[in-house]
Image (cartoon, rainbow, N blue to C red; front, side):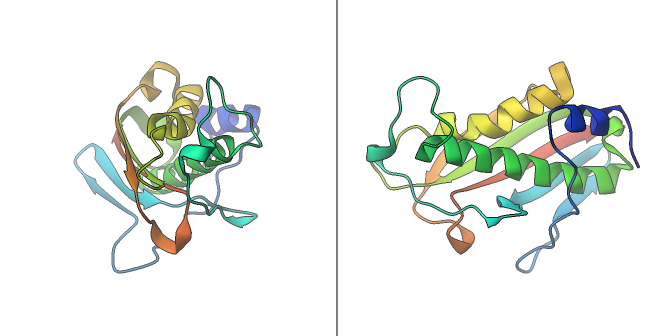
Length: 163
């Protein structure tokens, strides 16, 4: 199903991918009432899985360059967000049925010296704002993790309100 949100994605240079199958014993998303809870999505795309582990050596001031480790991790967080939307679309009958992005939780693969988790997860948050406008503004947590599945650099889960 295609609609105005899918058109917005296209304007931003993205296409909604096929939903990624779960990697273990869980379902990718659960709907209860008008809420969809999307399991943690990894940055899997056409080029495979974005992997990495950030340290204090990766610290950046201001906006990270796209080719920096933090910039690459931000792009991976956007990919996680896009993968979330594929599950939401499938479960909600299209993205035009999304009323609000309620909450995102991002996990950053890093050691104890890295402290720019919020900057990395901004990749997903800013993407949701670009796609949904005011309805993309959400509550959020951004935390560090000493490892993530398959060595992914970031993982993002979300809660969405739908019609």
